Amino acid sequence: MPTAERAARRRRLALRLFGIGLAALTAWLVAEIVRQTDWPAVQLALRQRRAADLVLIAALALASHALYGVIDILGARALLLRLPRRRVWLTATSSYACNLNLGSLLGAAALRFKLYGRQGVAVADISRLIATSVAANWIGHLVLFAGLPLWGGTAVLAQWTGWAGAYGLSVAAALLVALYLLACRSAREWSERGYRFRFPPWRLGLSQTVIAAANWALMGALLQRCLGDGADYATTLAALLIAAVAGAAMHIPGGWGVLDYVILKSLSGGLDPHRLVAGVLVYRAAYYLLPLMLASLSIGWLLRAPPPQEPLAGGTA
Image 1 (cartoon, rainbow, N blue to C red):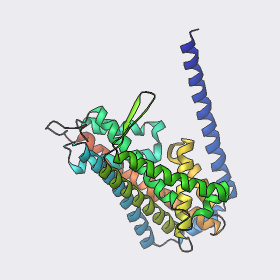
Image 2: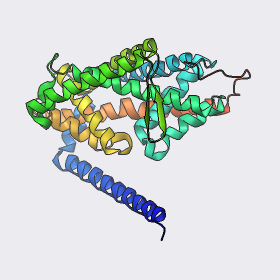
Image 3: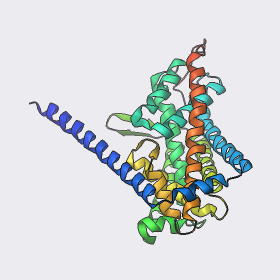
Image 4: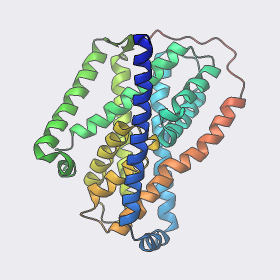
Protein backbone atom coordinates (compact mmCIF):
# COMPACT_ATOMS: atom_id res chain seq x y z
CA MET A 1 0.00 0.00 0.00
CA PRO A 2 1.47 3.42 -0.96
CA THR A 3 2.65 5.61 1.88
CA ALA A 4 0.24 8.43 0.97
CA GLU A 5 -2.74 6.06 1.04
CA ARG A 6 -1.71 4.67 4.43
CA ALA A 7 -1.36 8.20 5.80
CA ALA A 8 -4.81 9.10 4.48
CA ARG A 9 -6.34 6.02 6.12
CA ARG A 10 -4.67 6.92 9.41
CA ARG A 11 -6.08 10.44 9.23
CA ARG A 12 -9.58 9.13 8.54
CA LEU A 13 -9.29 6.69 11.43
CA ALA A 14 -8.00 9.45 13.72
CA LEU A 15 -10.93 11.70 12.74
CA ARG A 16 -13.42 8.90 13.43
CA LEU A 17 -11.88 8.21 16.83
CA PHE A 18 -11.84 11.94 17.58
CA GLY A 19 -15.51 12.19 16.66
CA ILE A 20 -16.37 9.19 18.84
CA GLY A 21 -14.43 10.73 21.72
CA LEU A 22 -16.26 14.05 21.36
CA ALA A 23 -19.61 12.28 21.26
CA ALA A 24 -18.71 10.33 24.40
CA LEU A 25 -17.55 13.50 26.16
CA THR A 26 -20.75 15.32 25.25
CA ALA A 27 -22.87 12.42 26.48
CA TRP A 28 -20.96 12.33 29.77
CA LEU A 29 -21.27 16.08 30.33
CA VAL A 30 -24.99 16.04 29.61
CA ALA A 31 -25.44 13.01 31.86
CA GLU A 32 -23.61 14.81 34.68
CA ILE A 33 -25.86 17.84 34.33
CA VAL A 34 -28.98 15.67 34.28
CA ARG A 35 -27.82 13.58 37.25
CA GLN A 36 -26.98 16.55 39.47
CA THR A 37 -30.09 18.61 38.70
CA ASP A 38 -33.38 18.71 40.58
CA TRP A 39 -35.59 19.14 37.51
CA PRO A 40 -38.88 19.89 39.33
CA ALA A 41 -37.09 22.80 41.04
CA VAL A 42 -35.73 23.97 37.68
CA GLN A 43 -39.22 23.80 36.19
CA LEU A 44 -40.53 25.90 39.07
CA ALA A 45 -37.76 28.47 38.52
CA LEU A 46 -38.69 28.70 34.83
CA ARG A 47 -42.36 29.21 35.63
CA GLN A 48 -41.48 32.08 37.95
CA ARG A 49 -39.85 34.08 35.15
CA ARG A 50 -41.83 37.20 34.28
CA ALA A 51 -42.99 37.76 30.71
CA ALA A 52 -41.41 41.23 30.61
CA ASP A 53 -38.08 39.74 31.66
CA LEU A 54 -38.25 37.14 28.89
CA VAL A 55 -39.02 39.85 26.34
CA LEU A 56 -35.95 41.80 27.49
CA ILE A 57 -33.84 38.64 27.24
CA ALA A 58 -35.05 37.99 23.69
CA ALA A 59 -34.31 41.60 22.74
CA LEU A 60 -30.75 41.37 24.11
CA ALA A 61 -30.16 38.12 22.22
CA LEU A 62 -31.38 39.56 18.92
CA ALA A 63 -29.39 42.76 19.49
CA SER A 64 -26.23 40.69 19.89
CA HIS A 65 -26.87 38.80 16.65
CA ALA A 66 -27.62 42.09 14.91
CA LEU A 67 -24.33 43.54 16.14
CA TYR A 68 -22.43 40.52 14.85
CA GLY A 69 -23.84 41.17 11.38
CA VAL A 70 -22.17 44.60 11.34
CA ILE A 71 -18.76 42.88 11.30
CA ASP A 72 -19.52 41.40 7.87
CA ILE A 73 -20.95 44.70 6.63
CA LEU A 74 -17.64 46.43 7.40
CA GLY A 75 -15.70 43.60 5.77
CA ALA A 76 -17.82 43.70 2.61
CA ARG A 77 -17.35 47.46 2.35
CA ALA A 78 -13.58 47.08 2.69
CA LEU A 79 -13.61 44.48 -0.10
CA LEU A 80 -15.63 46.93 -2.25
CA LEU A 81 -18.43 44.41 -2.67
CA ARG A 82 -21.44 46.21 -4.13
CA LEU A 83 -23.98 44.26 -2.13
CA PRO A 84 -26.99 45.74 -0.35
CA ARG A 85 -26.24 45.99 3.33
CA ARG A 86 -29.45 44.16 4.07
CA ARG A 87 -28.24 41.11 2.13
CA VAL A 88 -24.85 41.12 3.85
CA TRP A 89 -26.43 41.52 7.27
CA LEU A 90 -28.98 38.74 6.70
CA THR A 91 -26.28 36.43 5.33
CA ALA A 92 -23.99 37.07 8.29
CA THR A 93 -26.63 36.76 11.00
CA SER A 94 -28.32 33.68 9.57
CA SER A 95 -24.96 31.94 9.04
CA TYR A 96 -23.91 32.89 12.57
CA ALA A 97 -27.09 31.42 14.06
CA CYS A 98 -26.60 28.17 12.13
CA ASN A 99 -22.94 27.99 13.10
CA LEU A 100 -23.79 28.45 16.79
CA ASN A 101 -26.25 25.58 16.74
CA LEU A 102 -24.74 23.21 14.19
CA GLY A 103 -21.06 24.09 14.03
CA SER A 104 -18.74 23.97 11.03
CA LEU A 105 -18.57 20.16 11.32
CA LEU A 106 -22.19 19.94 10.18
CA GLY A 107 -21.86 22.26 7.20
CA ALA A 108 -22.68 25.65 8.69
CA ALA A 109 -19.55 27.16 7.08
CA ALA A 110 -20.64 25.91 3.65
CA LEU A 111 -23.93 27.79 4.09
CA ARG A 112 -22.10 31.12 4.18
CA PHE A 113 -20.26 30.26 0.96
CA LYS A 114 -23.54 29.25 -0.68
CA LEU A 115 -25.39 32.39 0.34
CA TYR A 116 -22.63 34.80 -0.64
CA GLY A 117 -21.84 32.81 -3.79
CA ARG A 118 -25.43 33.07 -4.93
CA GLN A 119 -25.07 36.85 -4.67
CA GLY A 120 -22.15 36.78 -7.11
CA VAL A 121 -19.27 37.06 -4.64
CA ALA A 122 -16.09 35.27 -5.72
CA VAL A 123 -14.90 32.35 -3.59
CA ALA A 124 -11.64 34.16 -2.76
CA ASP A 125 -13.56 37.19 -1.50
CA ILE A 126 -15.95 35.00 0.51
CA SER A 127 -12.99 33.26 2.13
CA ARG A 128 -11.38 36.56 3.02
CA LEU A 129 -14.61 38.04 4.34
CA ILE A 130 -15.23 35.01 6.55
CA ALA A 131 -11.62 34.91 7.75
CA THR A 132 -11.60 38.56 8.81
CA SER A 133 -14.99 38.22 10.54
CA VAL A 134 -13.97 35.09 12.45
CA ALA A 135 -10.63 36.65 13.40
CA ALA A 136 -12.33 39.85 14.59
CA ASN A 137 -14.83 37.88 16.65
CA TRP A 138 -12.10 36.03 18.54
CA ILE A 139 -9.85 39.07 18.87
CA GLY A 140 -12.81 40.87 20.45
CA HIS A 141 -13.15 37.90 22.79
CA LEU A 142 -9.45 38.19 23.68
CA VAL A 143 -9.82 41.91 24.43
CA LEU A 144 -12.23 41.08 27.24
CA PHE A 145 -10.23 38.01 28.26
CA ALA A 146 -7.14 40.19 28.62
CA GLY A 147 -9.12 42.53 30.85
CA LEU A 148 -10.18 39.85 33.34
CA PRO A 149 -7.77 41.13 36.05
CA LEU A 150 -9.07 44.69 35.58
CA TRP A 151 -12.73 43.99 36.23
CA GLY A 152 -12.55 41.17 38.73
CA GLY A 153 -13.17 38.12 36.57
CA THR A 154 -9.86 36.39 37.24
CA ALA A 155 -11.19 34.29 40.14
CA VAL A 156 -13.49 32.37 37.78
CA LEU A 157 -10.64 31.50 35.43
CA ALA A 158 -8.42 30.59 38.39
CA GLN A 159 -10.88 27.81 39.27
CA TRP A 160 -9.69 26.03 36.13
CA THR A 161 -6.07 27.15 35.73
CA GLY A 162 -4.88 28.41 39.12
CA TRP A 163 -4.04 32.05 39.78
CA ALA A 164 -0.68 32.00 37.97
CA GLY A 165 -2.25 30.38 34.93
CA ALA A 166 -5.14 32.85 34.94
CA TYR A 167 -2.89 35.90 34.95
CA GLY A 168 -0.60 34.28 32.38
CA LEU A 169 -3.49 33.64 30.00
CA SER A 170 -4.72 37.22 30.37
CA VAL A 171 -1.26 38.53 29.49
CA ALA A 172 -1.07 36.16 26.52
CA ALA A 173 -4.47 37.37 25.33
CA ALA A 174 -3.32 41.00 25.54
CA LEU A 175 -0.20 40.16 23.51
CA LEU A 176 -2.25 38.42 20.81
CA VAL A 177 -4.56 41.43 20.51
CA ALA A 178 -1.57 43.76 20.22
CA LEU A 179 0.11 41.55 17.60
CA TYR A 180 -3.09 41.34 15.56
CA LEU A 181 -3.59 45.10 15.51
CA LEU A 182 0.09 45.67 14.71
CA ALA A 183 -0.21 43.23 11.81
CA CYS A 184 -3.26 45.16 10.59
CA ARG A 185 -1.30 48.40 10.93
CA SER A 186 1.55 47.09 8.77
CA ALA A 187 -0.73 45.23 6.31
CA ARG A 188 1.02 41.90 6.85
CA GLU A 189 0.14 38.48 5.48
CA TRP A 190 0.33 35.18 7.34
CA SER A 191 0.91 31.89 5.52
CA GLU A 192 0.51 28.37 6.87
CA ARG A 193 0.50 25.17 4.78
CA GLY A 194 -0.52 26.93 1.60
CA TYR A 195 -3.21 29.06 3.24
CA ARG A 196 -2.69 32.81 3.20
CA PHE A 197 -4.42 35.22 5.54
CA ARG A 198 -4.13 38.89 4.67
CA PHE A 199 -4.73 41.03 7.72
CA PRO A 200 -7.42 43.67 7.21
CA PRO A 201 -6.55 47.36 6.96
CA TRP A 202 -5.90 49.08 10.26
CA ARG A 203 -9.18 50.96 10.50
CA LEU A 204 -11.23 47.93 9.50
CA GLY A 205 -9.38 45.65 11.92
CA LEU A 206 -9.82 48.10 14.78
CA SER A 207 -13.49 48.76 14.01
CA GLN A 208 -14.33 45.07 13.75
CA THR A 209 -12.45 44.35 16.99
CA VAL A 210 -14.36 47.05 18.87
CA ILE A 211 -17.70 45.76 17.58
CA ALA A 212 -16.79 42.16 18.41
CA ALA A 213 -15.71 43.10 21.95
CA ALA A 214 -18.96 45.03 22.41
CA ASN A 215 -20.87 41.99 21.20
CA TRP A 216 -19.17 39.67 23.71
CA ALA A 217 -19.91 42.20 26.45
CA LEU A 218 -23.55 42.23 25.35
CA MET A 219 -23.62 38.43 25.46
CA GLY A 220 -22.37 38.62 29.03
CA ALA A 221 -25.19 41.03 29.89
CA LEU A 222 -27.66 38.63 28.29
CA LEU A 223 -26.40 35.67 30.31
CA GLN A 224 -26.50 37.75 33.50
CA ARG A 225 -30.12 38.66 32.77
CA CYS A 226 -30.95 35.01 32.11
CA LEU A 227 -29.46 34.00 35.46
CA GLY A 228 -31.56 36.61 37.25
CA ASP A 229 -30.94 38.74 40.32
CA GLY A 230 -27.81 37.90 42.26
CA ALA A 231 -25.63 37.16 39.23
CA ASP A 232 -22.55 39.38 39.13
CA TYR A 233 -21.75 40.75 35.66
CA ALA A 234 -17.96 40.36 35.83
CA THR A 235 -18.20 36.78 37.06
CA THR A 236 -20.88 35.89 34.52
CA LEU A 237 -18.93 37.36 31.61
CA ALA A 238 -15.77 35.56 32.70
CA ALA A 239 -17.65 32.24 32.80
CA LEU A 240 -19.05 32.89 29.32
CA LEU A 241 -15.61 33.71 27.87
CA ILE A 242 -14.12 30.53 29.35
CA ALA A 243 -17.04 28.42 28.15
CA ALA A 244 -16.69 29.80 24.62
CA VAL A 245 -13.03 28.74 24.49
CA ALA A 246 -13.89 25.28 25.82
CA GLY A 247 -16.68 24.85 23.28
CA ALA A 248 -14.44 25.92 20.38
CA ALA A 249 -11.59 23.67 21.52
CA MET A 250 -13.86 20.63 21.71
CA HIS A 251 -15.31 21.18 18.21
CA ILE A 252 -18.69 19.97 19.43
CA PRO A 253 -21.49 21.47 17.29
CA GLY A 254 -23.13 24.27 19.22
CA GLY A 255 -20.89 23.55 22.20
CA TRP A 256 -23.78 21.41 23.46
CA GLY A 257 -22.94 20.04 26.86
CA VAL A 258 -19.52 21.69 27.06
CA LEU A 259 -20.61 25.33 27.22
CA ASP A 260 -23.41 24.50 29.64
CA TYR A 261 -21.17 22.40 31.90
CA VAL A 262 -18.42 25.04 32.08
CA ILE A 263 -20.87 27.84 32.90
CA LEU A 264 -22.61 25.76 35.56
CA LYS A 265 -19.34 24.72 37.19
CA SER A 266 -17.85 28.23 37.01
CA LEU A 267 -20.83 29.86 38.70
CA SER A 268 -21.96 27.04 41.00
CA GLY A 269 -20.52 28.61 44.15
CA GLY A 270 -22.54 31.81 44.22
CA LEU A 271 -25.99 31.04 42.81
CA ASP A 272 -28.86 28.72 43.61
CA PRO A 273 -28.18 25.60 41.47
CA HIS A 274 -31.77 25.29 40.27
CA ARG A 275 -31.95 28.92 39.16
CA LEU A 276 -28.53 28.52 37.56
CA VAL A 277 -29.65 25.59 35.40
CA ALA A 278 -32.88 27.41 34.55
CA GLY A 279 -30.89 30.49 33.53
CA VAL A 280 -28.61 28.49 31.24
CA LEU A 281 -31.66 26.88 29.60
CA VAL A 282 -33.19 30.31 29.02
CA TYR A 283 -29.87 31.50 27.56
CA ARG A 284 -29.80 28.52 25.20
CA ALA A 285 -33.34 29.21 24.05
CA ALA A 286 -32.81 32.96 23.59
CA TYR A 287 -29.34 33.06 22.04
CA TYR A 288 -29.33 29.80 20.10
CA LEU A 289 -32.82 28.54 19.25
CA LEU A 290 -34.74 31.81 18.74
CA PRO A 291 -32.19 33.25 16.24
CA LEU A 292 -32.03 29.87 14.47
CA MET A 293 -35.78 29.97 13.84
CA LEU A 294 -35.50 33.51 12.46
CA ALA A 295 -32.44 32.51 10.41
CA SER A 296 -34.50 29.88 8.59
CA LEU A 297 -36.74 32.69 7.32
CA SER A 298 -33.74 34.80 6.26
CA ILE A 299 -32.13 31.87 4.46
CA GLY A 300 -35.36 31.14 2.62
CA TRP A 301 -35.59 34.75 1.44
CA LEU A 302 -31.92 34.88 0.39
CA LEU A 303 -32.26 31.68 -1.63
CA ARG A 304 -35.44 32.88 -3.36
CA ALA A 305 -34.47 36.51 -3.95
CA PRO A 306 -32.88 37.23 -7.34
CA PRO A 307 -29.11 37.84 -7.16
CA PRO A 308 -27.72 41.35 -7.80
CA GLN A 309 -27.66 42.28 -11.48
CA GLU A 310 -24.53 44.44 -11.52
CA PRO A 311 -21.08 42.80 -11.37
CA LEU A 312 -19.36 42.80 -7.99
CA ALA A 313 -15.98 44.29 -7.30
CA GLY A 314 -13.67 42.81 -4.73
CA GLY A 315 -10.22 41.91 -3.53
CA THR A 316 -8.82 45.42 -3.24
CA ALA A 317 -8.95 46.01 0.49
